[in-house]
Length: 407
Image (cartoon, rainbow, N blue to C red; front, side, top):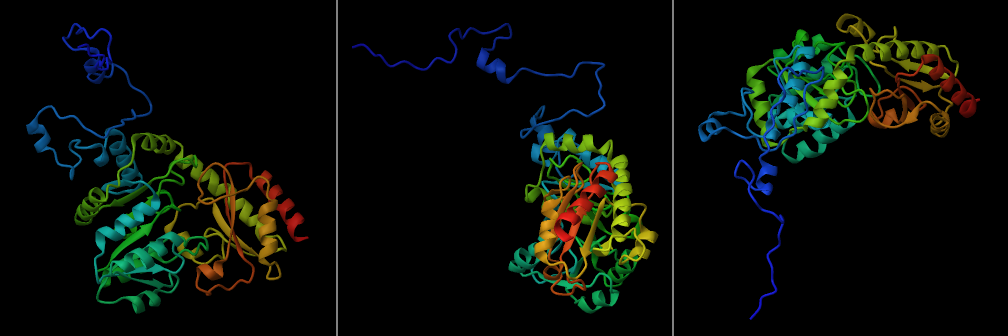
């Protein structure tokens, strides 16, 4: 009885090659060694989940907790280790861990250091998603989040309880851009034995050196200035404290917060021009902010480097530069409808979240709602992210949008 059933043939000629292996096997075991004498400006991009060990003893000897060897792609590759080392050098840290986003970096700090019954203090001008993380997710874990006025140190003292374990700092505040007294807040935390962590995204590791100020942990959204192209999501957590590093690293591994080699390569590429881009954003933003102060339609411009802005004296003392970011409000009679019309009338400024990329962005905010009603200006706030365009063109764009929407 004939049998018409045939096994599938993946290889018409399964003959072994010179090494004794058939094609399907040779495709999987084609070894690669970089050519001798080859080097390049950018480090190689390593993509890996599985890391190959030479033998069982080597596999058992390697420890993911110390970057002396590679264990699994999630825990690091030569590409991600290189990026971590460079970021730590810029920030002045001893250790760095990469995360899939800035918010993931914030969550790592919270989840690594807080447990049921603990308390965390957040500035009232904190990054919105960080506040939601604390008030919703952490609250569900039995962790109490409280807000303090970052411009009033007494507010911090009043908010501290025996179970307060973590004090978050923002310099400057998200959207409203007040610059707090970092040294004073750190001193209060130290007196009470509280760990301090700063969102240092605005300073990009350049304009503020957190560890020189006594801050315990620094995190950044590398999505912004480090990548510089508005096409990468990544964050980082850094510290000089060995005990904190061990806790952060353990949580980092258990939460699976690794990043891929391709994204790490994009951030590494951005670091070459980081200082130059940051300075260019800074120059343009200060020029445009100063011009806006002179416009009769504008009530207030919020930029830490401008005299009169909240916390300007702290900026002078603690900062060596400023991000290309500022906010402003129109005169009280300009309502939300006309503020939205102004943003819609902008041509060079695009409407979108985030900042630190090459293109200028504009976003309107209801600051009163964000700050729980504690906001002294009637007109909605507009935040401008100044990109790498010519500042004269951006000024002209703002002027024409005001003519269209306000006059």
